Length: 552
Image (tube, rainbow, N blue to C red; front, side, top):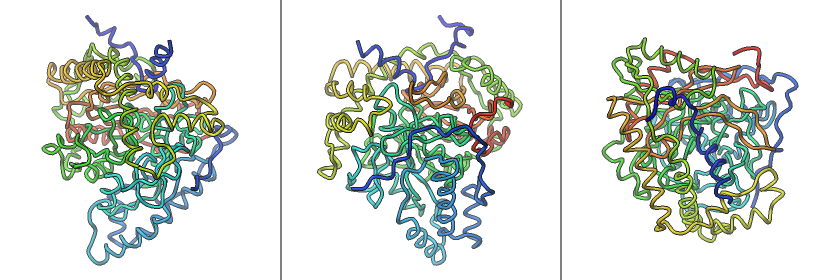
């Protein structure tokens, strides 16, 4: 039986943590210019000159486009210059792995269409960046950060890319990521890929942006683009959003199609918005969500998809809401606990009813089972993706990816190995008793005995917990060293999770997660927006070479 005191013990942070723990047990064509994988030296503060689009929202840009203050082409130019100044030069964030050579042409078409017919919707003419595991059938690569996929040609756009184009968005470029979405080694450094090199955190350049959506997190935080799309299996949207001071929505699995996205796990994978505000995230989610015949998981979303998630943006949305605090996911940082207590006090002041703590006894009990599920599904799902690519790729199976990496050790394996890929390749089919047992345990303990049980018992609208620790120093020798996080429960359940900035620790962002039942995105957006309007916690980065330990 758990007690409130036991519930304060820190649990595994996210996939990055439990992969390290479990791995120890299991162990008984043109390439974009590669950026050096070294952390910038902390010699002087690096700041950018004033940028007219810094922190600008989707709604503000639409007003400016409709009034003629800007054209979409001008936005592409301004963001491209910003990327050149801060990503390629200056602080060298290295968040954009590739620019879209067609961006100006697309922007011109959207400008002409706006003049002749009006805007298609809130993203018409708006620049967007997407993670380099989201397929586009254009002049850009889709590599998941791996040199093994350089030159591969997706037979079509991913559904995410299709929906963005249909909405009139301008895909400005692709973002760097933790290679293979952090499913190559349990000892990896987030933000590094063989193709893209190392992405750094814009708040403190020697600290980590987290992964696997590292480039999207750093780029949007630094106003290199308006909004971005990341992907998550466990923590890969909410954790970089935490580290980079963003709003990140990891939706219910099936709300957004995964077709054309380099996979890890069909039971946990999803794409999702990464933005500077809840309003922008809701606008982007409205475009991305929808049923797709190419992804069977989206069929369950049909009665739940909202055409416009911005309708949930209610500044009084906390009034009368019942919110449970998962204290077991706290306790890893005195300063983060302080911010969490301040956030809870703000929710109470806004009329929320807070139940603190809410004990979920299954937390931490299915971490090993999750790893087994991911290993089995990674092999099966990746092999299917590579088969979809057909002959237009130099690797056709996870086995061939492993062989490619061994044959290109200097480029692909200089800092960490591919132990997870090797373990995945050794797994059998998805009919294996080992896999089916692990999957059943994950679903039972994360859903029926986890989130669903807690929310039913306490009649909750949402659960909250600190998303994770502030950004750790990047360490290519030893790999990541996170100390806490709360992504796993919602990730394994396949349920929605939203990170919102809640404050700073020594100038480094820290976020709070709102998560709950399947298909509860609308309610979570309502709560997250109301909290955001109270806290106003987000501040833009100043590109310090290292964290300022004299301020908190």
